[in-house]
Length: 214
Image (tube, rainbow, N blue to C red; front, side, top):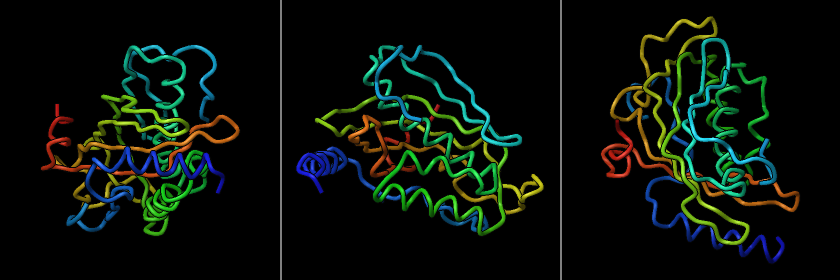
């Protein structure tokens, strides 16, 4: 590990220290109603407003882009939004689309792969709308940064591969657990691309998750 990379890791871990919960992606338990390409920074600033992208048959991701982002912060936030949409594309394609893996590394790559594999192994897919909002760059420290976001997955339904919703929907699709506060630590590589290293999230009844509820 190079010196700058080691320093970036220490900085990002420090950035995440204030956010409790597991560093992993949210647990995927579809049958258990019990628990629940990136820009380099150059170019135009992302305009504020809603953006909807298709992630598969009957599956969409809606992102509310904040205003006031400069080109550098736009690239940082885009690293997260691209990954999030890509993760759902992997689900919508029944695991065939693996482009989401290009936006994660280290622990985040392992957690993301495990999350998608939960769908693939169970022969599940999803339909509906997942939403991202209240996105912001919480801090930047050299080659590391922290992104905060609110996520609402109440509009998502886990389905079988034919698109029929499964009878026992997982707890994370149902309020209040369907809305949560997400933190992502990102690092800029030698190629200028920002990639996610670590995830943390806070679910209801954590106060940060409550603040995401509309």
